[in-house]
Length: 111
Image (cartoon, rainbow, N blue to C red; front, side, top):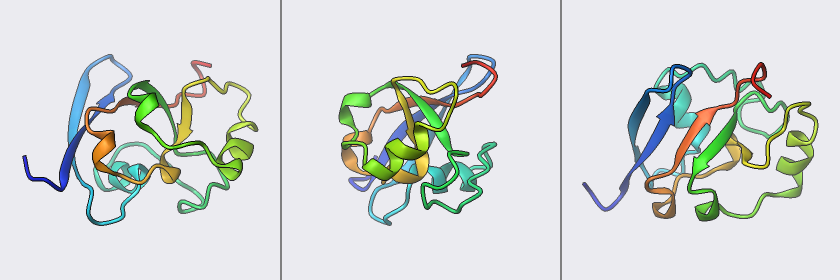
């Protein structure tokens, strides 16, 4: 694996897990990688933390993520089914610390 690449794991609705190889040197967000990989992420606001349609539930590696910003928290707080491990993928810039991160795309029906 190259120094600027990490692997993150996406748990699908059926419980299967896909691994995505992600570059860390391009300034991309997790949302951008999910969209590029054709996952069902709406990202209506384009990554401005204004819609919460890119919400993910972090299953492993939550402690590797940076602090949640006030803007991200304010948007997450509008979700009726917010979980303690929910984050906005648009606010998670890919970096080497995120190697091994495991998450699933937030399903509003599961809350």
